Amino acid sequence: MKPTIALVGRPNVGKSTLFNRLTRSRDALVADIPGLTRDRHYGHGRGASKPYLVVDTGGFEPIVTDGIMHEMARQTLQAVDEADAVIFLVDARSGATPHDKIIANQLRQLGRPVYLVVNKAEGLRRDMAGAEFHELALGEPWAISGAHGDGVRELIEDVLEHF
Ligand code: GDP
Ligand code: MG
Image 1 (cartoon, rainbow, N blue to C red):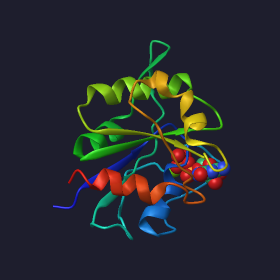
Image 2: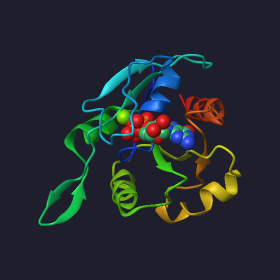
Image 3: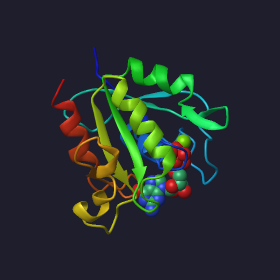
């Protein structure tokens, strides 16, 4: 069985851009409009030392109940549940947001290996890009640029090493 890596994160952090790079496809929707990927979207990872599957998740606006955002959408939870590892993307340019913290809390409870990945980090030092995200309590952040490719290969090889 090929390991499955789920890309998770709030809208606009760059999940679909990374999906396209990993799968070398153009078919995940990338846009400035948050939340465009409405369903789970699977592809074959390419160019790594082992085969793997990658799933882009979208439509992950938290469900709002009693005025508080407290739940990731069911689709996301299912994708995470089915995945062997989770890449949790955050945005170096916006820092850790309340929405990131909600997702981080949920991921910690789901019992899957989680890689905290700071995207849009082109031109930033890894330690500088990651500093703000230690508070998410998901370990040492990786810094990548899904758009430019910086750090992407190293990240994927590290994830795949465990399978
Ligand atoms: P998603 O909603 O998480 O799937 O995010 P998208 O992949 O659609 O990207 C949202 C926006 O961020 C788009 O304008 C992308 O071009 C931009 N983006 C994605 N990755 C990077 C990156 O590594 N660096 C920068 N500067 N922008 C990025
Ligand atoms: Mg998307």
